[in-house]
Length: 218
Image 1 (cartoon, rainbow, N blue to C red):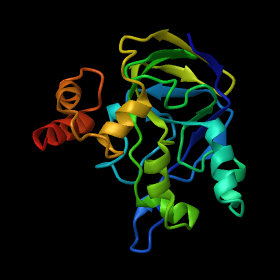
Image 2 (spheres, helix red, strand yellow):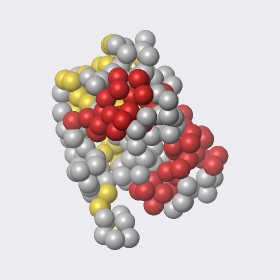
Image 3 (spheres, rainbow, N blue to C red):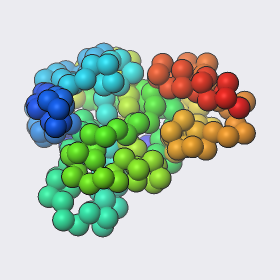
């Protein structure tokens, strides 16, 4: 059973970000306040692109704190890596890396109950935020993606709460395996697994659709 303290809670609202006037809420601010974690996400947290971010399958973004050492070694000149929130995460903690966390894992945190819905699919905004051209590519190659959670029971959360694993219904689906199949290019010859994912009840809808598309291409 995984049990780990929630080190940081981070929220933000959309700000001008891209060169073409895009808005983004990737730059998060740490808070010690007790916040309501609802079905659509944390109180006070908004997304800049509602078509690709937010919603019930992406109510909460977690990024493993232990990954920061890897990124600091790769980009030692970046000040943004000196504090949590570089990847736009809402939760920062240790012990929930992609090989340790499984699809469908359920955790109690504060008053809320959350369930892992999929890994994070990186986009161009990471390159822009870091000022580096290869961040997206490196996330795909390394599998250091972070994860998304849906909310099963709403409730207040704050930094210092513990994330305590309640269930692991699908131990055969660690997130590193899932990410490799759907995003990392490891889908060839894996049609049966992809068909399973296309109908998986815990997997986020957009990844179920992607799994079905990849299965059809086998």
